[in-house]
Amino acid sequence: MLTESLIPFLLLLVAVIGLWVNRSLWIAALVLAIGSGYVTGALQLTALLWIAILVLLALAFRTMRELGSSAGQVITGVTFFFFSIACSMLLLPGFERTVLIPETVLTPGAAPFSLGVGFPKVVTGILILGLINEARVRGLAEAGGVARKTLPILGVTVLAVLAAVYATGYVRFDPKWTTLFFPWAIANLFFTCLAEEAGFRGFLQHELSRIGSNSRIAAAAALIFSAVLFGLAHLGGGWSYALAATVAGLGYGAAYLRTQRIEAAMAVHFSVNALHFLFFTYPRLA
Image (cartoon, rainbow, N blue to C red; front, top):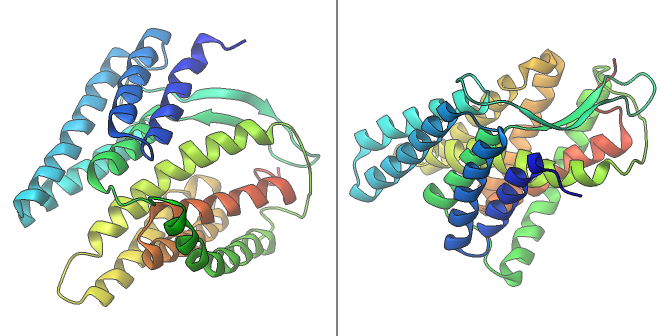
């Protein structure tokens, strides 16, 4: 039986899926998710204010782009990005990380694992893909083309990242199966991967690649910068983990650069995470 605490996150899931279905659906589901989050205690009153500011900043950036105001785009874009980071890292009062699965040790020698969801992180991803960068796969034919372009990058990225975490002693080969994979996979793909790829690739890399007159140099610089920043965002796991995350960011960014579709970056990201979960120590050695 579903508990009240799950309702906001189920509505968030509907909002995420709604991005590929209908604008009215994702907007309605997002509003309901925020409202139910407040009612169930997942969000405090101040959190509603921060989310409202996030929405206004996203709309302001979109407006500046439509008006062709370079200065306006820089000001609103930088403000939106760093404000969203503050919200996603729960640095502002009113947000709490909701734990869906309490700490458990998946295999002997592994550090404790828990499954939590950061509400504002997912909201930010939805706003980026719903209001700022709306380029998504439309139809099976396009999906097939994106998949063909992505598969070589996926293979190289998986090998490079998992080799890096294994070589540094962060994990060991540790194949396993647990039914916890199912809730983990849903949360990881639709919440973690979507939010992080929307922020680092769909917004940061995409917007930086449009700066300057030389598109190739701008695209390469945007790819590297977003990957390095992605790695630094994972410093909480240590330097070896941050280095692996930087390598991963290069792969995710390359998939996005080649296809210009957020689904490609999400697919590579999720594949790395899923193989880590199933075949190596998760989340890391204790």
